[in-house]
Image 1 (cartoon, one colour):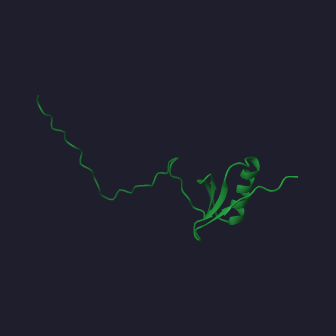
Image 2 (cartoon, rainbow, N blue to C red):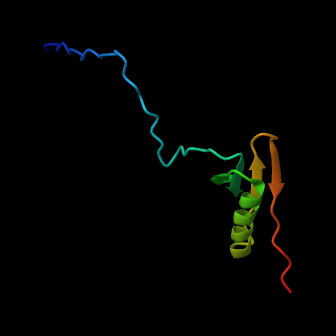
Image 3 (cartoon, rainbow, N blue to C red):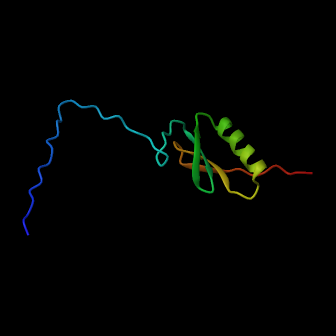
Length: 86
């Protein structure tokens, strides 16, 4: 059997800028506070109040899930509890 020789294309490395492409797997996280639902990050917020408000909305609609706000700077996790319903 004859063997084939494969020639690879030559890459041009002269000043090419590669932009980072974000996909569904890796999202840009710009805020300090991360909203986590069942330990999966769903969003990032600049202030704790915004993250707590979003977490409270999720917890009211779905009281069975584990909702928390993670502070990336202090490395602390705050569990969000559902308000008592009369």
